[in-house]
Length: 253
Image (cartoon, rainbow, N blue to C red; front, top):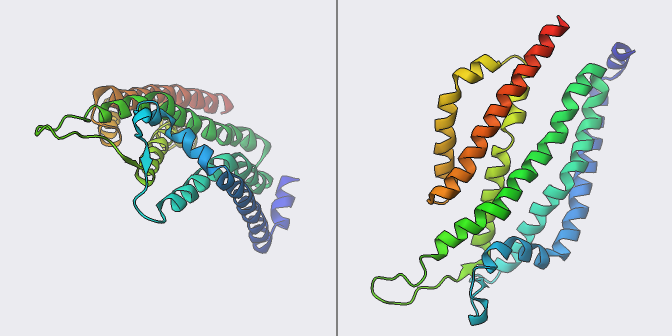
C-alpha cells in the first residue's frame, strides 16, 4: 500500500503539498506575529525582567532608545522572535504532515521523537538563559558601575535594541547547544557516528564545549561553566542514546 502511494505522488504533487504546508506555516507566523506585536510591551518587560531587578529604578535607571525608530523596530523584533517560538509546534505539525505520507510506520516512529524533542530542548536552553545565566551575567556587568578610575560616576543606561540583541543571542546560543542530543542521535541513526566513535572523541568534545562557552558567554567563570557543563552532560547523554540505537539495529538484523 505504501509503495502504491509513492508511485501516485508525482513531482507536481510534492511541490503542491510543499506549497500548501509553507502557506499554512506562514499564516501561523503572521497571525501570532500580529498578536505578539500587540503585546510587545509586555513581552519586552518579560525579557528585560532579569536586568530590571538589578537596576536602581527608584533613581530613574532603566532602558533608553537613542534612535527615533529604535523602539518601534525593537518591538518588531520581539514580535517576530516570539512568533517563531510560539508557532514552531504548529510548523512542526506541517513538517510532519508533509513527510509522514512518505515514511513507513517504523520510520515514522523513529522520526517523531526528534520532532518533539527539538522544541523541548530549545525551550530548556532558553529557560536556563532566562532564569540562571542572564541574572548572573547582568550582575557581573553591572559591577562596573561607579568604578571609574578618575572618580567620574559611571551608570548603565541600557539601550532597548542592544539589550534585545544580546538576550536573543544568548537564548539562541543555548537553545542550539541543547540540540546536541538530537543532532548526534540522528547522525548515529544514519550511521555517520557510533557510540564508540563518540567516546573516542569525548576529550575533544569537552575542549570544544569550553571554548564555545568562553566565546558565547560573558567572561565570568560561572556563566562559562553554566554553558559548558550542560553541553558535556548532553554529549554523554548522546553517547548513551547512540548506544541504544546501535543495540536496536543489531537486534533487527
